[in-house]
Image (cartoon, rainbow, N blue to C red):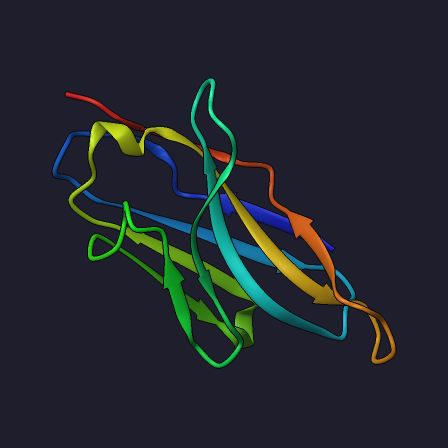
Amino acid sequence: VQLQASGGGLVQPGGFLRLSCAASGSFFEIKDMGWYRQAPGKQRELVAGISPGGNTNYADSVQGRFTISRDNAKNTVFLQMDSVKPEDTAVYYCNSAVRLTIISKTREYWGQGTQVTVSS
């Protein structure tokens, strides 16, 4: 299973970005998907998560500004980042909980990370 993230870059404060992460490979099903971020000198933290049915949860710091969504048919998760702030600067990682076969336990997979820099 591979997760390919894209969409990062440089954006001005108050601007927006849209991150995408597509899962590929051989697997039975994808359970929860999410986005994490890690800023220099800080621990990786959960930004937002989404269940297969569309239930979402967000970090307090991004609530109301970021929106997570997914396309189950395309095994893809998105993160719409609006009204970005300098403190949103970090490497963003996508994460998926995957069952490889019908009898497998869920296993976590990570994307390679995409840099988001918020600066004027």
